[in-house]
Image (cartoon, rainbow, N blue to C red):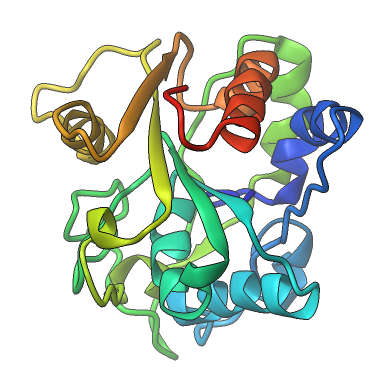
Length: 236
């Protein structure tokens, strides 16, 4: 499970336990420079860095036949990781996430940080967290202080994807948060959801909450992931 921008592995803390209780191994790598690894941030941290974080977690643990999930910005990370670990993926899940094509960036897809610019020495290279809403005020009080600035270069480095996602042998699902109105311009997550909904190569599901799915609706997310892990070749 790969977290999003300004976040960390702790964002999946309500999901890991139920998945493990159901008999699954669960890995939630923290991306360099954010979350619990915020002490490692620098202008040199990039999308390539985060792809390496995920690839190395899979390679060093020698994981295969995996369900790989990218949440939000994590969708760009897992897409870039396919060049290295695509043959180890059984099912790919995008959780209210960016779904980039070759050469696209978070900024080019219309991400909220599109004007951040490249991360270089002598420039403002950290992007402050966007405000988020939680159903539980206690969760907001806990999670808010743990949201950390994000290196801007991660949002402007293009992803590399050797072939369209639909051409890979693994199955794939898009899970959309539907608790917020669709923006007038659609937005990148709704565009990705529309792509999945219109294609027989994707499965599409919804969770009725805002973008903070793993915090607000962990039970619903666990149910969908258990279905994906147990029955990867049947619709979720």
